[in-house]
Length: 112
Length: 112
Image (cartoon, rainbow over all chains, first blue to last red; front, top):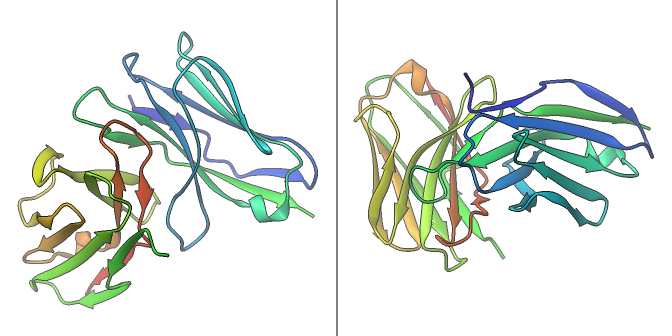
């Protein structure tokens, strides 16, 4: 079983719509959850992190965490063409300090 | 200002050679990491260093060796390069008591 699973997509949404990205993880002991954005040929860029159950909002981004369901999601409101990228979900492991396990990423395309 | 930097950006070499990739961070972080991103874009942890001590060593071949001259630098040495080593290698850093990791621009290694 993979540590972190994401739908690979591609996910296409029209400009201005809400994009919803989902991630599940297998280790119930995981404490920290991260969303990274990676443009083609570039490095992963941290856009959101969440440590507690519930919602966390930052601008157009909202991260949602449900530890009971082992589920974390990212909502992007008012999607822009510049949001088109691969979004990586990452979860920490209990083993070692801050060892992150990454999902395979969801490719998002925002259509103008 | 560059937070995490890597050199070189591109590295093309032949099988059997030995090569090094350098990483520096100016964020004042105390933990640094090396990740490998394969052709399918899967990002996997290789090593992490905390205060010059190796604290995580995933099951990577012993041809790979991280070396940290000081807290701001973590270099990756690769001996006897193989075709399967071709990938993008990312350096990252974080503060130990916080999980957020920040990535360098990556080094695309091609072994011919």
